[in-house]
Image (cartoon, rainbow, N blue to C red; front, side):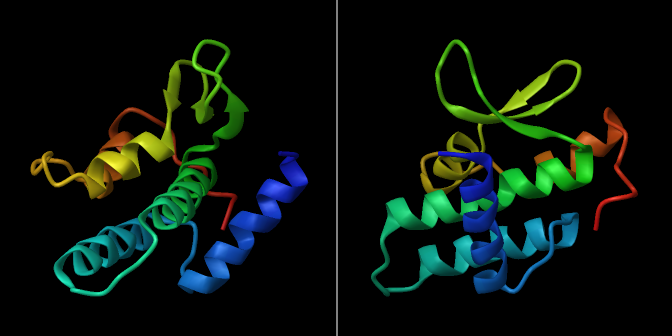
Length: 124
């Protein structure tokens, strides 16, 4: 998938969710997943994981100056935050949806990154 198509898809998800690419929106996203898990409504879990993972990845990119790339070992689309960190947003969100991992919080992970990474104040 080209970068242009990926960016268009992510922007559509952003509009659908009515959120920004920031820390506050990551917290709202986590609450949305919690709400979805508590409801008896039916939803396409694969689509939800994909959309939320793309949005989460874009938040990482905007806040921590990362970039999308294909991991040369796993061949998965990941967010690279130079010089040393690669995050697979799909795995992060998939793990959160999996209620066997009760002590996970991708919001707290996102927020905690600010202690080791510079925040990009230029992107909104």
